[in-house]
Image 1 (tube, rainbow, N blue to C red):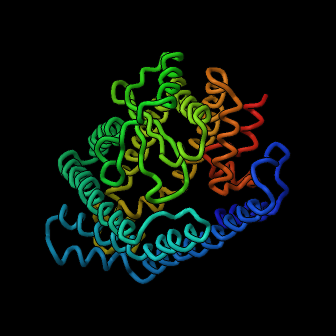
Image 2: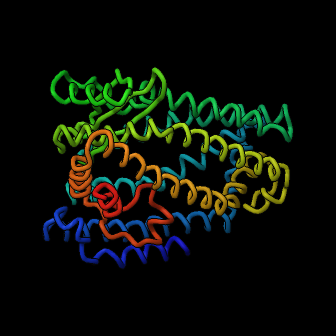
Image 3: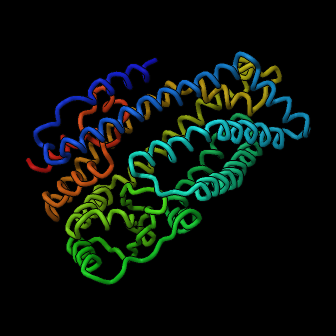
Amino acid sequence: MVETILDYLNAKHYGDPIPEALEDVFDKEDYQKSQEYQKTNYRFGLLSSSFSIILTLVFLVFGGFEWADQLARSFSGNEIIITLIFFGVLTIGSDILSTPFSYYQTFVIEERFGFNKSTKKLFFTDKLKGWLLMAMLGGGVITLAMLFYQWAGPKFWLYVWGLVTVIIVFMNLFYSKLIVPLFNKQIPLDEGSLKSKIENYASKVGFELKNIFVIDGSKRSTKANAYFSGFGREKRVTLFDTLIKDLDEDEVVAVLAHEVGHYKRKHIIFNLVASVLILGLTLFILSLFINNPEVSKAIGVSQPSFHAALIGFGILYSPISELTSLVMNFLSRKFEFQADDYAKNTFAAMPLVTSLKKLSKKNLSNLTPHPAYVFMHYSHPPLVQRIKNLMA
């Protein structure tokens, strides 16, 4: 209900006049196109979220979780295998049911507004790769969690916390080397003036940078991005080929300077530590409920089990999860201002301003979001606030 109200309030602002500081982002035709894009996504979001809610309610009311539990038990009497089958049925089944929505989003909405570059073959190949990764990583974590639960009893959460923390740190270090190549090609940035400017900037601010890669994001979308990953010797900057195409060299360096700002201000370490602490809190609370048969019964499963209690806990825990997301988004918006300030002070404000405007225009961004929607959902400040901060 709250989400629906926030979406409605945000949608009511779509027709607002462009803020004075952003009047040069869109001409009249492009602004109308951006508003139509936002409205289309709003209507589609209502449809897809309603489907998700109805599906969950149907599962709860008509014994869907009990059916999945009995189906899993018909294959084996081993609790670990039962758990893996149970989650496999629910996860893949849910993904299959949601595939028509993601297909429509990609090949109708994104296609209509000129963003989509993906093919149907690539779309479904990505799906299969995602399932395989989910089976390997998710299945492995669930298996070890069950083993810890059977071995350590109520203290299992400590071992699961340690396991997942190791995975989180490992993924932060090696995600770009191990996972990204399964979906995209990454090549070192070619020698030339852009690479020289990036290296000169990195040397100026004392940022050791040997790994600058370009990723072929254009094979799926025209939208541009850049991101920083890893730390220590494994840190690297990845630039989307669309970013290099859409921005001039100083603007690319300004975007990079913003990412370096996150590293220098310890935002990456903070987010890593915060995610680990939140994970620990979640697992501790889970340990208090996991042996309560009422949690399994709450989702209609007659035979209490680890997997049923996990699903029930996930539903009951969602309000706390929303609260932690709210806090993290608030901090993330502050971090974005700090990274912008770092880029302004160590490079220049104007190239970052123009790059943000170009990317907002290219992505048909909403320039007039409702403040309540921003407070609840935005991990980045609205563009007008970032521009005013950079120009101050």
